[in-house]
Image 1 (tube, rainbow, N blue to C red):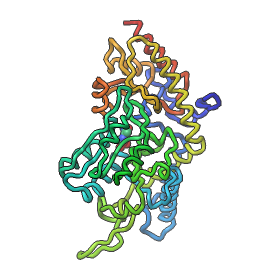
Image 2 (image 1 turned 45 degrees about the vertical axis):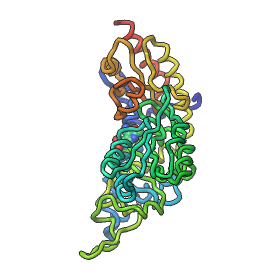
Image 3 (image 1 turned 180 degrees about the vertical axis):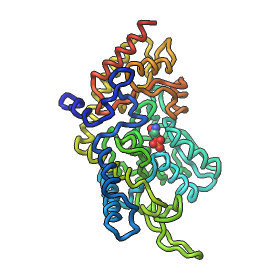
Image 4 (image 1 turned 60 degrees about the vertical axis):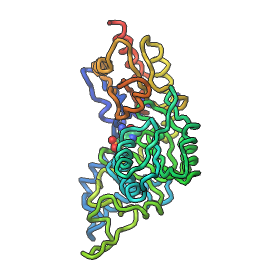
Length: 406
Ligand code: PMP
């Protein structure tokens, strides 16, 4: 990480100039949401100042500008994910809406009683609740891939669960609660070998590593723009084109139809099929700007630097007596979950906040995995490429002071 200039990068993020309790803001809550570079903020303002129009519907100049910018953003997402076609990129509100779309448009229409769905123990509630509801509604069997005490997928157990009734495996590439990186490619191949489809939750992976949907070969991948240095309210469902065109619409109304009479409705193909109504045009364009920004730095360089930062922080954190690290997988993204003996997680969070350091405390919308690890909640600093070793030092010093003053 030595030739990666996080100090220079920091300057691109206006909010990182904020002070909190008189201290410079240290943003260690990146797994919850990431901060936005000026380029993204400016791009959204530019849209509203120069391009704002609804898309696809009018033969006037601004409609053309807005449509072009929106479709250019779709192309940027396609390139970012290495998808084969822009028709495979559906804009949604975020990862949560993406999972719900697949559960409804595919699961609810294609699955029948007795079919089996598999999720992993690591999942965020967004990749549990829609499947649990669907399973209850339709009489499906929902099984859970177990993890070991480090928070790593037990591949042998997973292999034993797969069978001809397995219709879907839905799992995350990176755990938001522990940071575990799952062996996604291998798990996708294993599912396909029994004819099951795979949904990958990319909410925590796309900002840390190269995600190549053609290499991974998952049937769907979802992510949220706001965790990728883009705006809130915009996200993506990647889906294989033929599969998307076999799926029922999600919501219905304008934009997604080819022809309407009171007797018969003909739907568009993907992606419009799934984009009913006026979408979040400005923020899709903002997401495109975020992808441009990241691509200029390079996602591989980002991943390498974050790994270095993670190792640095992990090493120092482990030296504090009473720190219990939750999630010690060999392959991890830059998420640190821990508890500190003698203090509630809330007390630790507040002590950090007094020094301007933002971390999440709580269950991180992933209660099953935290309970599996023997806790209800943790303190979770999650690092991004605009964080520095100096930020980590302030964080570590604050914990030491808290520990020694008690
Ligand atoms: N999956 C994972 C792994 C996540 O970390 C999150 C967000 N914490 C989600 C899904 C849901 O994302 P969103 O709230 O943006 O829809």
